[in-house]
Length: 544
Image 1 (cartoon, rainbow, N blue to C red):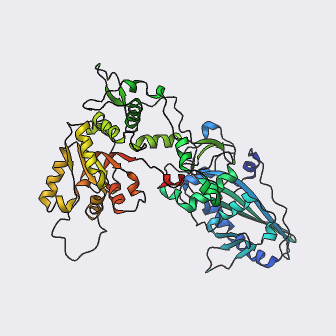
Image 2: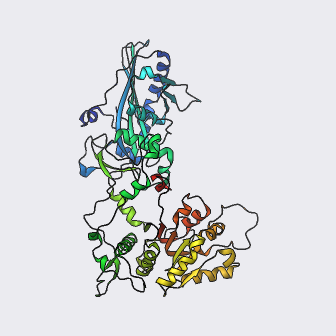
Image 3: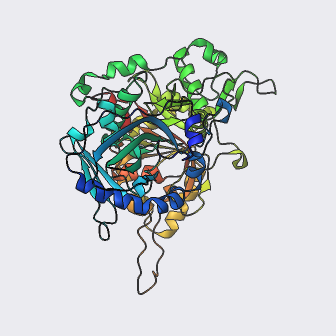
């Protein structure tokens, strides 16, 4: 019986998919541990029947009780998991137990009661979770399991040490249903496996940690052979796979038809004349901020209006349609490392993200393109905006129209020079950190007001590193006396910036430095990384 499904025979027989085929297995070598194990399984079968659905939650219970076959229109967008594959292993042995009545028991949610550990040399060991009260353990040796292919091994490994609750979104895991049947002189134990891939509505950073990515590559190669991989599952071939040249060849180059009106773009107050490729780049920057250039804003003048994506635009070209173990449609993205019933959910999430990475080679004009964006797309009235992004903010930040530019110290003077040359009307200031600029509470408040009246504020990664302790709230501690003096707070996190631009963004590629930490907590609406080296050693640098 596939785990997590209805237990009625009528439902099972009406499924469109044939039942899993039990492998031809040699008999148990020692029946004693099996009988002890089966006795425990029989004793918990009633509890499992009553409580297994509760342990998985109402949402999963409703999912498990779905009809045998659903039309495409009935597919659940919010399915908690996608069934990937099923396999049934059965072991039969002569039993010394005598009785005229056959005994049967099923543990549909076996992970609630048992630990499963598979090792290729030792086989599959099933142990009762409540080891203090129950000594029920059985090991199915490799000889007893019989021949296993690569898919079987992956499914068994995905059952290793799964907790009583299903893993978090985005993970592969194997659900196990145990069935036992005792008849006159014979005992049969069936281990029914269902590989599941939990759905996700976000691209969680933990999904791209090396162990998860390596497991996912093996799973995709085995169960979704039509899905392109971002690297081979064999680590030894990874260094020859995905060179920087592959990255550049795969990059999307916009056609002229995509930005028809852009060719006539003229940036007000910009002293430079943009090349056609630069105008197209600025058009893309505007799109990423939810705006677009038009020759007629409704008043007969050219300008910027809200961006409306084409209605016939495909959700994502890197989501590939495939089918699950029930033959139902699902969509897989090896880039995101996720599976979903509806990729439009990710499209909506991406549209809610303002900003991106401006990646062009040195000398192509990234700075002047950024200045053009600042000139064209000013902050509209606050009531029409998406909320500022500030995961760690404890207070509502004050919205301002300024752009914060973070740059290496060596490039600070270049930014000042180019802003003065190409946008002489801008009000530009340099912020050198709290230690130099805000020695007391009064100067801190004055700096906040100063930021609010400037168009561009420039600071460096070095200044940010020294700002961390003023930007992040310390852990709460129980002190005997109350703090008599308010803790200094960085003015950078007291405001909602219209835009934050990180020049040479590879400076914080590790994501764990002081500068990277404070950049994450600065409230902003639009966030940009500007770099000429989006990847350095290999294609895996895109995850940095």
